[in-house]
Length: 226
Image 1 (cartoon, rainbow, N blue to C red):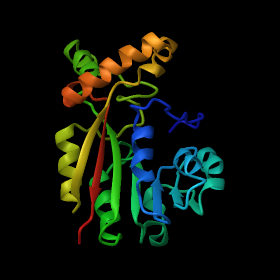
Image 2: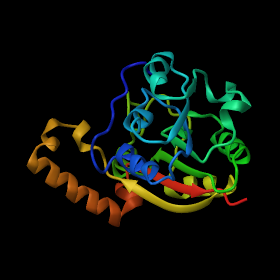
Image 3: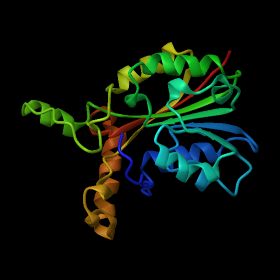
């Protein structure tokens, strides 16, 4: 996995912004586990709230950057985290994590079993059925890249159907599934201009209508009932 600086996604349509809004709606003093903290965006952006953040991060440089914002952070791969790190939370965030795991179904099921009833899960994964990936596959290309849907560190690939199935099989009830548009602001600085943001808004609208085709990521909000 790359140790380059992990950039916050500022777009209102990004997975970062949407998961942040979900986290901010949690009851005061909720205990939140951030699996794969990267540089600590989630806890850093909530440092003036009463929410309590705990984290797991395998990349040493990212763990060092994130640790000041968490009550406790375990700098290790998920599979090496002790039960203390995985148990007893009000909310679990797995933002762009499952695709990096060789056995994401087992990891999610384990986490679900260790939480109390009422625990919420916020999960984001890339959509391998995005139109960009489909067109490349039609042209006979399935080339890994430095980042994005075909990031070279991805071990598993998801569609809306497969992430829905995985979440349900883990014992969670799905509350909502959102699709994010392609992050055009990362493609060109043009899309940070007024006109560029207009085009981005149009794409966001198309994504909400045709999520499986235009969705860049899927964000799942789910809850454990028993």
